[in-house]
Length: 166
Image 1: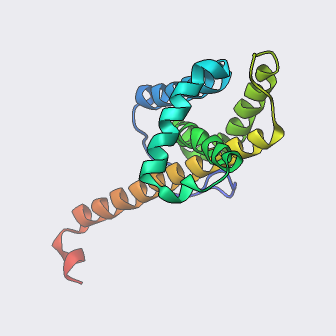
Image 2: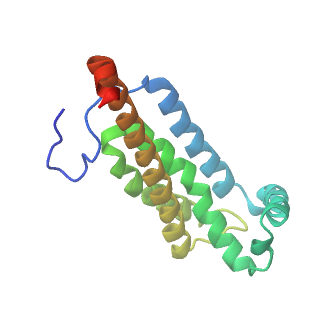
């Protein structure tokens, strides 16, 4: 297997998993982002409050952060699954998940202009994009590790026990 010189192709060319589950994961991640960011704040507030209560119990260090910092962390966390799902969907083109995250976030902020209780914010776009970046890198790392494990297993099968005894 050869790699191309393009920086986008950081993962080798391999057979990929069926498209339907990856497409479903990306669609689900997009739907969750849309539901939580485009619904009026009064509809989302109970879910946000319940989540913050659980975070305070699980991670006491976040309890001391100001509300603005918690919102920043939540903005980034919201887009991690989106970045990961799109990266898994795109495979070798996983880097495109990062601008997709920024693009979705910008579209959400633009749409929030007309939603009662919502205020568009450029900082949200940046933190959402950072979440997409984190998700894409995690997914690409997992794909790369999976490829290495498969390659090692294939090598062991080809060489048999000779490779193990060396």
